[in-house]
Length: 167
Image (cartoon, rainbow, N blue to C red; front, side, top):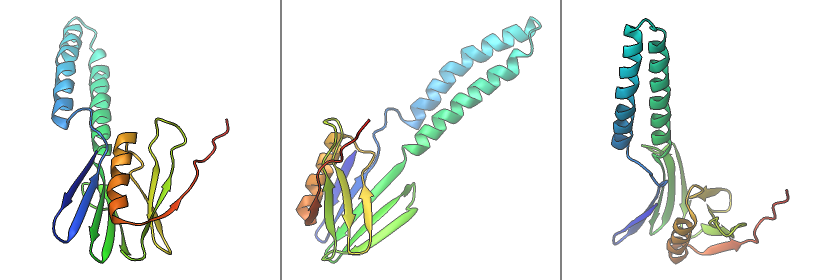
């Protein structure tokens, strides 16, 4: 998903993966699965099959852990801030873990066309010494929207041919 905010002196573009469900909905699904699963496990425990309880608990713990991990991975963000003189790229979960800052005059945009019709173009911001790929997790429509926003603000330095993939 691509969102942008513009004011007089800066443009902020936030890139984030698409969410299929919120953390609250994931907890409700876990609860809806836990109640019958634990109910059945407790019923079998009263009938003498008590070893089923730890396995039911492990199963629910594994499901909860998987849901939490996926939700955490979907919190990944790329924030591109374009000011009059600077271009800043921040990447991270919840808070920036990596940051790059380029002079706006020295920065340019590198576009690698998609190798498959479903893929989006590869987008890289770079200066003379560093290059940073942005929006690798975006779908085709979001990648094209990002490319449109960046083309209005940053000059296109290179536009390469798609990579040939041999199988």
